[in-house]
Length: 121
Length: 345
Image (cartoon, rainbow over all chains, first blue to last red; front, side):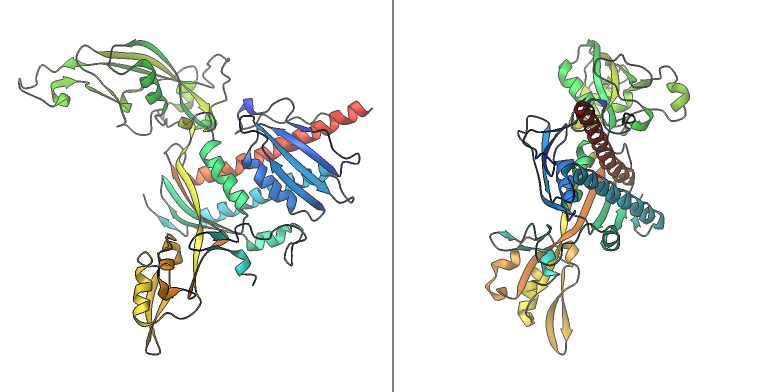
């Protein structure tokens, strides 16, 4: 069963290349250490994903870099303990980041309903 | 360092200290695995002011990377509609074609980007992905003006071309979809160019969906910025005349001089208004008595919309864009894993 992305609402169709993520050579055999290269991404997703992955106590090391500003590529290096692997850590990081956003969005909705702010027309 | 101090970025006379803090696993004391409940308890969002074009709100308890991601998305990755292709039929005005086209692109268009689909550069324009405007202006002499009139607005007709002269041409089913709400520029009085009698401009304008990353004309915000909430700590009491000098070092309303037990003391009442100019660090009297800091996880955002989308919509969209990025990355990761499995077999 192929996991397809539904046509996104916001991201321009040009920003979803065929191979969005690939693992760079040099990953450990059991995948506890790996460097992922994500295309068409920059500090926006990079820094927040790095933060989300770092919150995982099974992650020994996580960092991101942009090899060259002219190329739209971002590398994320994850090194974990042997209780998990890099791919799982990445997935968990993405899930956590999404959860944080959903929560912020819900709270924002609540606060807008309360109308407890100065409003000017 | 106390728990509170760990949360502060210290602003000194010549440098800034404690910028990144100690928030990584296995650092002393505080870092736990990501606990959603802890986050839910410590997170808050406060809306301070909301107008149709501007919003000031506080994001408390998130990491700087998320606040920055939201700021970057607000500026560059929320789609809007703007004029992309200008087909010049006639331009005898003094402003060159390309300069005119550039100016037209920067005009904010009042069209909800959700109603339109993305258009690739090589795709043909359809009613689902393009808005068509026409600009037909000709400048003539105003016969009924006085002979010695000098004001071009009175002497000529259409001497200045404004954005309200852009005429929307509904194509396909656009008339039904948007009939009641004409699609036009947000502001009617944007000066596009100036003409004199005999000069005319005739062109067809195609408006498509894009993001600020591609061209700044697509950015939905005039700007979006944040600052950290200042926290002025008075370590030793500042009394008497020193208190008055202390008050003058900050913008009005930040520090108040109050009487406590017969002594006039300086007290910080509204650190939010402070612009952290570090004026107080210039005076010897306050050495060792005051510490200028910023709270590391309290972001005071200011979002100014150009008018296409309201500021609260912009913030919601920014969060959606970040979530969508996560979704796309997850799907790509699953695809990659799956293709690896296939190769392995």
